[in-house]
Image (tube, rainbow, N blue to C red):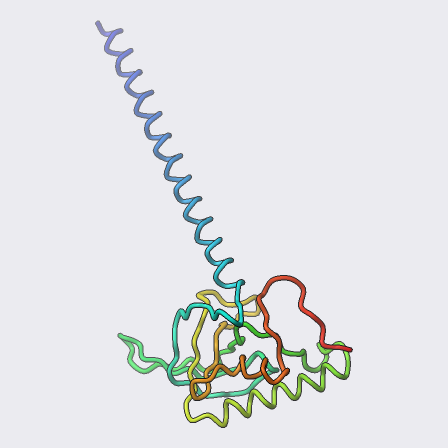
Length: 186
């Protein structure tokens, strides 16, 4: 009888252990699938920026002040926000990469004098558009920062997308984030 009870207890332990192992495998598979679907959604959303179809807005800063612009597609702003617990908050000197555009490189990163000259014009026009505006809004379009730690978003000066204006004036090009970028040198 003792042997029979021992065999039943061992069989029950094997069954319980198998069920626990199967449950853990299912949990790991579910977590892996959730991770993959999140990452694929990120790739499709954040790197498929199309100038004709703007990406969805993740967050909007209704008040912003320009600090400076590095080139035609990156500026630093003081972003004013209202936090539900802390009240008024300002993100000082936050770098924002303009979504959906590529501007010429400036300074040592320029590949030729023509690119450097166009980069200076793009930066000057971007600063003029922003500083001449009565209202400045930053629409963040990605939950993740780019590889340089910048927020990615649209800059709206008096409601107009300054990136789209730079493209219209041939001071920038549409940029999807995929493939090799076209050069600016003749």
